[in-house]
Structure formats: C-alpha cells, structure tokens
Image (cartoon, rainbow, N blue to C red; front, side, top):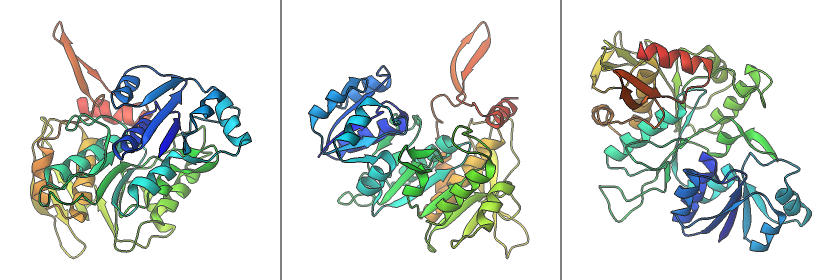
Length: 359
C-alpha cells in the first residue's frame, strides 16, 4: 500500500512513517518544515519528502492519505483531498488499525513524564528479552530510534512479540476527530502518570481533560491494569467517574513506593498490597537520574512491566542500565567548570520538578 502522510515531520507522524515503511508500505509525506534532523532520519529510511502542501501532490495517487493534527481546514492539499472525495484517515486511527490491532498495548498517559516513562518501560521489556515495538515522542538513548515494530523475543526467535509500548498523548487526533489520540489505542496496560491543566488551545479547563482520560479508562479491559499516580486528586476523579479494571497506585502507602533516595539518584523500591501492614523491599535502583519525578516514573514502569510478566527484580536490573532520553537533563558539555544541561521541560510543573531534582 502507498500512504502519503500530511504533517510527516512531527515526532508522532514521523514515527508512524517509520513503522509503515518497516511494515512494507511505500511511504511519502509532506510538511511545511522539512529540515534536519527529522528530514534526514526519514530520508535515510527511503521515505520521499515534499516541502509544503501543494494540491498537485494528489498526482502521487496514494491508496490513502494519513492526516496529522497540524493539518487544518484551509490547508490547500487537504481541501483538494476533500473536494475530490479521496480516502483519508488520522494518524492514531491508522496506527490502531494497522499496527496495534491484536497487540498487548502498554500506553503511558499523563501531563508530564510520558516520554521518559515510555522509554523506561520499553527498555525494561527489551532487557527482559520481550522485544517490544514502540512509538515514543523522543529518542530513548537505549534504542537510538523513536519507533520500531515488535521484534522476535529472545525466548522464541520464530515468533513476534505481542507487546507494543506507546506514548499516549491527550492532544486531539485530527481536525475531523477531536477526541484525544489515546482513545484509539485500546491499551491492556494503561499508565496514568499525572494530570494537570495543559493544551489550553484545545481544552477549556481541567475537567475537559479529565473527561478524555475517563474515555481512555473506559477502553481498558477487565483483565487489564490501570497503573495510577496515587498523589493526583485529578486522576482519582477520573477513576471515580467509572473504572472496570484493577488499579495499582504508585507514590502512596498502598502498592508501589520509593524510599531512601540518595544524592546520586539511587533509591529503594517497596510494594505493599491492601492486605499487608507494611511494604516489602523489592530491590534497589542504582542509576544517575535525579528527582522525585523520575522515581515516580520508575515505579510506574516497574508496575506496568510486572503486569506484562516481567519480574520486579528484572525491571530493577534494567533500570540500572537505563540511559534516559535525549533532551531530558542531557549533559551537553562542560565549559570553565560549568556543566550545561539541555532539558525539554516546558510546563511550569515540569520545570519545577526538574530543577528541584537537580538541586
């Protein structure tokens, strides 16, 4: 099949392009900003890129157009597609129907920490030999790519892994589908990292975002698992709207906790279920990541991996070899004794927690 992607140079749509190419499709795409590093990454995959949205691109005659959410009404190529009645689909729906169908999807949602937690979870599954597929809104340094299809597990080289880790964004799907992207993914394991007001361009208030998270929770099966930040009252409101799935919390006295955090970033992991009077030590994470937010991300990834069958001690061992994500407290160099970091944090809370961790 030939697919033509509108808005291909975004991280998410670029990831879809890589997955589609790996699946054997012919992939072309266009965007208003075709430049490195995304352009070179896509071109190295044999994906033809076109600058701009000229209606003449319909002469490519693809089987379907995959529409990114940067495309709006008035876009000249989109208007030509609509006028001619050509087939089109959103990126999340294409992904759900062509990649995620039949997979054990582990979706990581939340205002903050999605990329880091998704990267941790994918790495844990990889370390355990489960060879997951993934689509992450950043480049995990353990993999060097942001997206790949499921691979052959270590235990059975003649099969393909059923697991797929996806960063589950609450931003809207497309101009013709105003639901959050993550509603399409139908996860078996859903991580709810946190929930604050964000994306003021599409959400009126926090309640509007909570409603979308409720829609996500409604898609998780009874035999699935919701892994939830127990400190977030907003997420508790989401669960209180209705949940038909077991819930494990992290960051509270019940279920998953961190303790004895050290200045080098290391900490202990404890687990206590509702029938136990105190938590049981599960192991010690020795890594260089700093801050409570990263400890919370780690607890979420350990809990989610456990649901997929990975023993806690294996997850802890994997995290000791986790290399973080590019532009997440990434050291760029040292000048005159001053260490320069590059960090993606842009929401006020993310900036606060990142700086607090560094202090």
